[in-house]
Length: 305
Ligand code: PY5
Image (cartoon, rainbow, N blue to C red; front, side):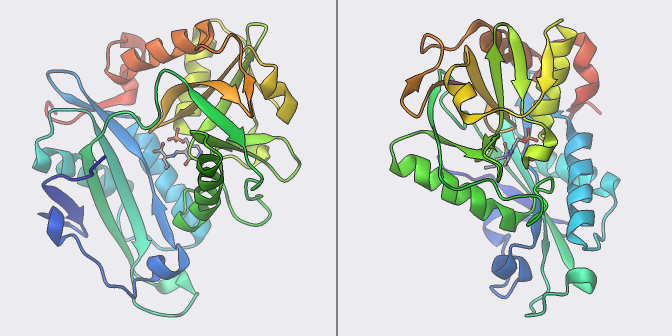
């Protein structure tokens, strides 16, 4: 997949893609002091709809607070920058949006409190992140970094080294995706997705104290399933429980709802995406395109406002 578009938003200006450059002594490049989001916008044929824009921007500010940096923008300015980026590129297809705040001062100090924070918004056409027909996953040996060591609730660049190592381990073993356990040996999440399991018609997902990122798609799925009258519970999930689940699926902005059909060589269910996964994936696909009245509050139109 080649990532590109015509324009990038960088510190208040819309610049050409090839001109969106930063210095090699940028703090975030050395220490991972960046805060990013992954957001999708869906083309309906008439307009481009950003999914849960406010929630993603709010999480950015929460991540900045946790890191302890001062952001020189308001949430409204970040939302407007995102919309401006999409309009500048005149996208008429599904896109992925990557807003990133990063400590940009060229310095060696670790004291980020007074350092400069830059904001960039990069957006580009994007299709599927994982094969939607179902993936093979491995529980990897790298554990999900614990809340006592790094704030996993924050989407901070440096924390992603954990995900990179996990995914590389899974791919080296021939699997599509990694599933990480937390420090206590319970299932935490995928390298870039939250995990759900279905057993006897009930849906379970690890709680926030299992060192997970509080995913916005996870929240969406919990709400959709609950509204559909399904039973959903947040509780610790043991490794062996995912082997014997009827269905397992991963959720995230990039992954959307991806069925897992095999884990560590064990077939999940009958090896095909199960009915609960399919039902939720179909509903999610409609909701993000603004086709379900009840959830219109979650979409922000780019061109018609
Ligand atoms: N857990 C981790 C570690 C994540 O990186 C992500 C998102 C999620 C869960 C799901 O969060 P949300 O539903 O809020 O997106 N991952 C990025 C994404 O855009 C991609 C990282 C490669 O989906």
